[in-house]
Structure formats: C-alpha cells, structure tokens
Length: 513
Image (cartoon, rainbow, N blue to C red):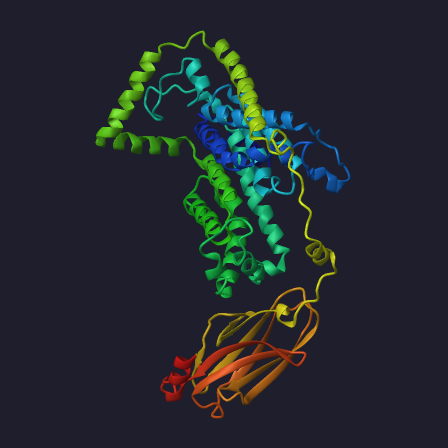
C-alpha cells in the first residue's frame, strides 16, 4: 500500500512540478491580451458612462447586499485606469515588464468587470480573470519577450535546436490552466443536466432564432430541424463531461481538442458568440508541451528553407538583432520607460476622452439634455401590459411522419394513402392551460377530420395524428389550429395518389396560390 501511495505521489509531483520550458504559457501570454482587445476597445468610449460615478455603474455585489464592495471613481480617474488596463495588456503581449503588466491587467480587468454586471461581467470575463492570474504567476515572460531580450537571451529562436538553453520552470501554472478549462466544461455539463429544456432542444431553438449576441448565418436554418438540436445537446454534454478525462497527453487529445474547436466554431455560426470561442481557443494552447512545440518549429524551419521570402524575412530579423547590439544595462532604463509610458498613455487617453466630450459640456449649445417624450407614447409605455393575443401563444405548426421522443424527425407536406400524418403544434411559453383543436379541411373548406387535445401550462407542444384514408382523395388540404373557438394558424399540405402523383386540379390550385 505504501508503494502504491508513493507511486501515486510521485506521478502527481511529476505532473505539477516537472521542469519545462514555458512555451505554451508564452504563446498564451502573446495571444490572450490581443484577444481581450476585442472586448476592451469597443468599451473605451463609454468608460465614463458605465464605469464611473459620472454615469450609471451596476456593481455585481449589489445583488448580494453589498452595494459598494469596490470603489467607484470619477470619470477622469476611470478613463485613466482603463487606459492603464489596455496598456498593461499590450505590454504583457510584448513581454515588457511581463509580471507587473499581468498583475495590473488581472486586477484592473476584474475591477471593471465587477463594476458592470449588465454588459461586461459575463462567463468569458470570469474565465479571463483566471487566465490572467495564472499567467501572472507563471514564467511566461522568460522567452519570446522584451524581458528575455533585455536579459541577453538573444539566442535559441528555434525550439528544439541542439544549442537550446532555455531556462526551465515547474509546469504547475500550465497544469492549473488545463485543469481550470476542464472544470469549466465539466461544470457547464452539470448545469445542462439540470436543465431539461436543453435536452429537448427547445432552449437551443429559441436561442438560435434570436440575435441577442451577434448576427449568425446558420441559427435560423438549424432551428428548423429540432431533432438535430436534440442530438447536438446530448453530444455537447457528453463531450464536456469527457473533456477533463481525455484532454491529456494521449491519442484521445488529438480527438477531443479538435471537437472543442468545432464546437466553439459552431456556437459562432449558430448563436453569434465571438469572444467566448476566441478565449477558449487561446486556453487550448496550454495543452501544447515541449514535444508539440518542437514539431511545429521543425515544420516551420522546413518551410523557411523552402520559401525564399520566409528565408529573407528571417535573415532581416537576424540582421536587426545584430544591429541592436547587447542590451546589457538597459533593464533599469526599461523599467523607468515602462512606468513613464504607462503614465503618458493614461494622460493621452484622458485628454482624448476630454475632447470627445461625451456629455456635450463644451458645446456652444451647452450640455446635452434629455428630450421630453411624447405624452401619448409615455402613457402607452407606462400603462398595464396588453393581454396576449391568442396567436401569441402559438409558435409554429409542423408536419411529418416520424416522431423521435417528442420531436419530429422529418418535415413533409406531401403524403400518400395509408401514411400517418403527425401534426405538431409548437407553443410559446408562458401560456395558460388550453384546449386545442386541429382540423383538416379540403380545398372547399369542408372539415375532413378533427382532433382535440389539452395543452397544460408546462407543455411546449401538442401532437395530433391522422391517417390518410380513402376519405381524403388526392388534392390540396389545410391544417387549421383553433383555440377558444377561434382559428390561430393554418398550414397547407397535399395528398398524392398511390403512385405519388398529385391530382390535376392540385397543380391548378398551386399555380393560383
């Protein structure tokens, strides 16, 4: 037993503390702050409005009974701090005073996120704060950085060369980042397991039909195939549960990580997510070890030898390094330049924001004022909500022949004698208990068949089954949905003959319609 414990302890110690060159963390340090610019820069011109006492902050802590957990500053101070955050992120990407830059980035990024839970505090900002913290605790600035160049490490530009003498550090920051992203996926899977509407596809269907994030090209199209959404829901949960167990150094890693890339790319195409996939892609770099980086470097060296312009580019970079000479003695000057540049960048941002004049205080007309709303429009907005129309309770009506679970697996509008028609009436929550009638009418508005069903308030759909009999000759028909004695929806379909041909008059009716 002691031997087994010792072996397990040795494996854990090796897993977290085996020395390695921090290639992966250096790559994340370079890419991650640049990705965050996609979130930080669009908010720069509204810093005074959403992050300062001059505007309307929305601290996350207010919902927990602590309205002033973090301090709020004036607009000028908020703009200066936000400028320092942007500068720290960019300097971290360059590796200039790396640890200080990452600490400043982590603190200020968390601070501004806590100040605005309405639009800034999101799932990806929570992930970003953890990534910045782990980067600040790592030695990601020891290679491919200004700090490394200032220390005289101007050699070993190609990982894997025999002359490589990069300094090695314990692997625990990278391991913690790997565990973190795995736990995030696992927690997301547990949350989905406790959300029944996720597995029925209803939640995904409604999300895909909105553009609450950004516009997306495939969301509306895939929402027409709910059975696919059900399959994607189960695949997503299985993948999220298995990620933390299969993402390590094994043959499974080459499967589980590409699936993750495709998964997040799919959320961009169907849900309009942009920042969240990019942040997750960046964290995947933590799964690159030294062997992976050496293989990529060897592949790139081969391409350099085969490409004239790449060879010329590398030669130019080498010549530039030689002209720069030795940076010995520049470290103290670089730190002073870092502090001066950060302060200057903050002052310039404050000055630019001052002349943009968000509130029009320096306009000849004076400060902007709220325009009085039309009294009639104000009465309409403040009046009690209008009752839902009957049609508002109904989302759509679909027809098919195959039912998987509670969703149609196919959609059809043409049927032959002997087939079964499944009419699925999709409801819009919330709704009250309803009695729904579904009638089949021919082209003369004669009722051929009708069924009724009770849809209780928790139901999302009601199904009606009809058999195509001899009482329904080939031709055009209408499926009419009624409730409270009033029609709310209708859908056209066609009955074919036994050979699959439509009645001659159907073509005329179709042309007329």
